[in-house]
Image 1: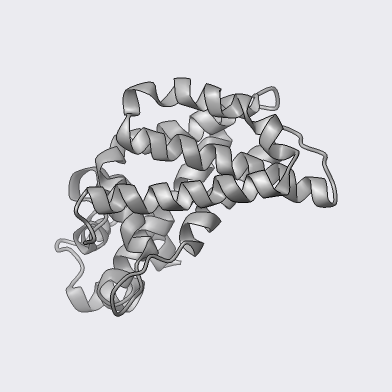
Image 2 (image 1 turned 90 degrees about the vertical axis):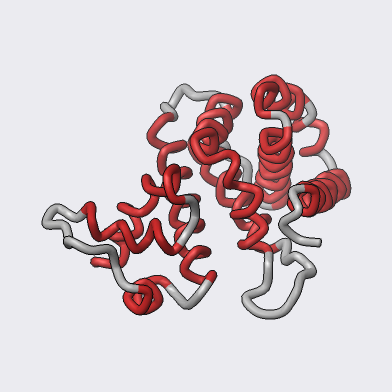
Length: 212
């Protein structure tokens, strides 16, 4: 499908053009038989959405590809730490762009904030589910949900740390994973950890002046 092909071609352009409609427009220049001109604004809207919805489409496409890179970089013998570290490395080329990208995902399509936590929860939950699968997690029932909640909380905390202190990202990941077994034993602790992540994410976004 042309839309999916163009979206995949736009993702590498994010490093140069950011999570923008321009990156989507220029994707057509990288087709096997490329166009001579970028897509028009009308074409971008038709394919990817109106206004900032097109940018959200690009951000979600980038997140999907980053998870695919995490899977491809992992092996059957990879530890949970290795898998999550692989995902964090995918952030590095576009790290300065991520606070604004996450803010856009969390902002309503119309009107003013409050931030919507659902996109952030979906983001870390997908990573946790993939990471548990890649590392052979065999938990079932309530333990299945607790384990994924704990891994999602650990990854979310490490990613938040990466946004503000990238040089110590992997040391922090080691520290937070050391707490995972403790967090995994209590649903209330998982919920508390999750609320901390959401508050911190909103705080980082506001501290960058993206939202008042």
